[in-house]
Image 1 (cartoon, helix red, strand yellow):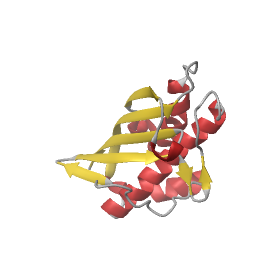
Image 2: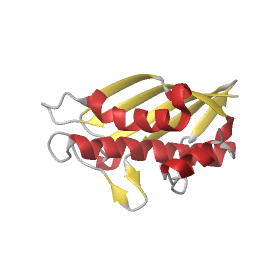
Image 3: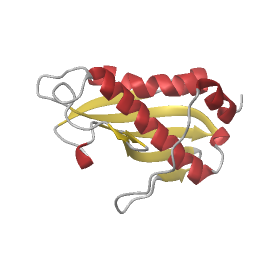
Image 4: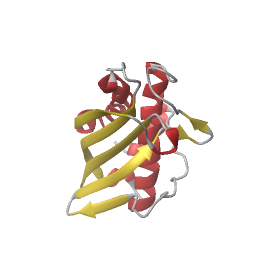
Amino acid sequence: MDIYERMRELGVELPEAPPPVGLFLPARQVGSLLFASGQGSFYRDRRVEGKVGADVTLEEAQLGARYCILNMLAALDAYLDDLNRIQRVVKLLAFVSSAPDFYQQPAVVNGASQLLIDLWGEEGRHARSAIAANTLPSNLSVEIEAIFELK
């Protein structure tokens, strides 16, 4: 199935590709693997920021994780010029800005994982790590990087 058709079916709209805020590339291809740089928990004019479990609820953080993927897909769309070139999602590495007593980082990252599974089906299932962080750039609540395999 065409990934853009699937996005339309799900009501998924990609934002403009966010520009890098440092000296790095949004994506780097090595062979058939595409490494996507970390993207943060904002979508257009909405931001999910602060510590999850103190300033941000689990549900808000899950939405923030989804925003990370939307930004990542926008960046990859700009890089690849066609998201249909993605064969499968290989791995996510997620960081969650967490209050000291918050231990549900995997549940937060489910917001990202679910979107990828909704879009790519079984090929969207992936290996994953969800790590607590004391703080993240720009006070964002979630940052996610990923590895994709290309066709």
